[in-house]
Each structure stands twice: as C-alpha cells, then as structure tokens.
Length: 283
Ligand code: HEM
Image (tube, rainbow, N blue to C red; front, side):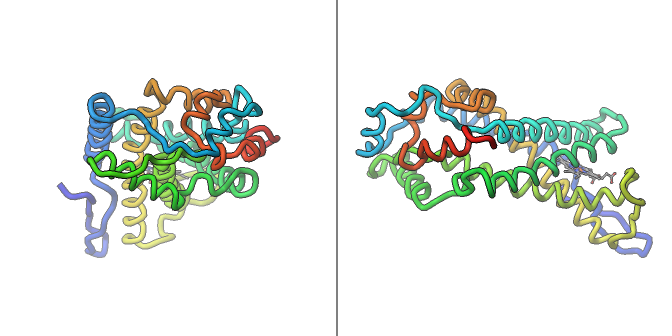
C-alpha cells in the first residue's frame, strides 16, 4: 500500500489526487499504540518525578504571597482552546466518517468548521503575540539540558535531577510544535481547496492550479489531517489521565492549585507577575 493515490489526468499524466485513506487506520492504530505504551511505561517503569532543589523555588515555596489559586489561562485563551477543540473534532468527524462508510453531505459542514478553526488560529496568533507570554511555549536551552538529564537518569546514567518546569514542560512544547505544523498545513491548504467546492463567498474555480499542484495540496491536507487523528488522541488521553486532571481543570477554571504549582513549577521561570498579566488581566 502506498501513501498517495494517483490518477491519470485528461492529458495522460499520472498525478497524485489524495492520500490513501487506509492511512486513517495507520494513524489511529499508531495513536492507540502510543497510549498503551505510555500507560504501561508509567504504571510499571517510570519513577517518581524528582526535581533539583533550587534555593529560589524553595524560598518561594515557603513564602506567602502565592495565591491559593494560581492564574494559568485567561478567559480569552480558554475560549480559544474550546472553540478550536470543537472545530477540530467536527473537522475530523466530517472528513473521515464518510471515508469509513458513514455517508452524509459532509463538505459544507467541513469547510464551515474549517473557517472556524482558521479564524480561531488567527485570533490565537495575535493574542499570543501581543497579550500572552509569547516565548513560554517554545523550547529553551534549560528544557533541552533537563531532557538530557532525564534521559541519562532513566537509562541508568548519572546526572543531577532536572529543574522544575517553567509554565510548560518540554513535552507540551513539542506537542504544540506538532499541532502548529499540522494546524497551519490543514488551514492553508483548506482555504485554497475551498476554491474547488461551492461556497457563498466566491465562484468555484477548479482551474486555479494545475492538476499536479492541486494533487499535492490534497495530499498535504490529507497527511496533516491523518496526523491530527493521532495528535488529538494523545491530547485527549493526557487530558483524562488522573494525574493530569488538575491541568485539564485549569483549562475550565483558568487557575491551578498552589500545591501543584509549587510541586512542579519553578516560580523563577514562571513568575506570578507573568501569571497575573496573562490570566488575571482583561485578555
Ligand atoms: C482537523 C483538520 C482537518 C482535517 C482532518 C481535514 C481533512 C480533510 C480530508 C480528509 C479531506 C478530503 C480530501 C480528499 O478527498 O483528498 C478534506 C477536504 C477538504 N477540506 Fe479539510 N481537513 C481539515 C481542515 C480543514 C480546514 C481548516 C479547511 C478550510 C479552511 C478545510 C477545507 C476543506 C475543503 C474545502 C475540502 C475539499 C472538499 C472537496 O474537494 O471535495 N479542511 N479535508
């Protein structure tokens, strides 16, 4: 089985037309294997989280001044998250249910949800650039060094314990990178693909690009789409894991319990001043 399905154009050229839809199963099974592997590793092999004790964070933990509920996500950030989640699930359902045999007129629902996702991504880019702590979600040198320490300790080597996290652990930052790549790929290609279908916005024009360009666009759209099946499965799995429920709750209430904050986060790397600016402010 190949990754791409080809067809012969009216001019006799062999051109890609879209992904092989059996990839839906490949990515769903890959996602499932990841969940099972992770759950086994956590249950039987992973040790307790240990962090390097930093004078600063210990001092901070003993000082008052950290509120019982530490602000984590502003109302705008939470609304973005849930609008994006609803549109993403709608897109996955409308795209793949018909391919798996459940037939309905999916295209209109699909591009409407696509526009909602694209608008929410644009909002998020502006919001994150001007109101949020933009760099908090990108990996930094401390994350890389701590990942190396964690790896050495997990494989029997000698290394000091990693430091406590800033706002986001490295895994969340890497996940965000993958979602950025897949989300931007489906949105940009999807916007062009709207020219191929009937919408109230403009006249349909399937000749905007040649067969090869359209084919590659459909392939990229489909590959990012099936990638999102595995990514969303992982995201939901982590959201419902018992030890992560406190984080999931913060995406509803906007705040984290002080104990959790002090146990896992370094107040010097994720300062309360940043918290208040991001979550306590109007945006
Ligand atoms: C989770 C995100 C998305 C997934 C999983 C997804 C998946 C898919 C799939 C599998 C197809 C069928 C492609 C084919 O037949 O080769 C498709 C078509 C399409 N998608 Fe998406 N898509 C997503 C996001 C978007 C977005 C954001 C937009 C618009 C901004 C969009 C607009 C379209 C359009 C217009 C079509 C073409 C329908 C046609 O030519 O019949 N999609 N999508």
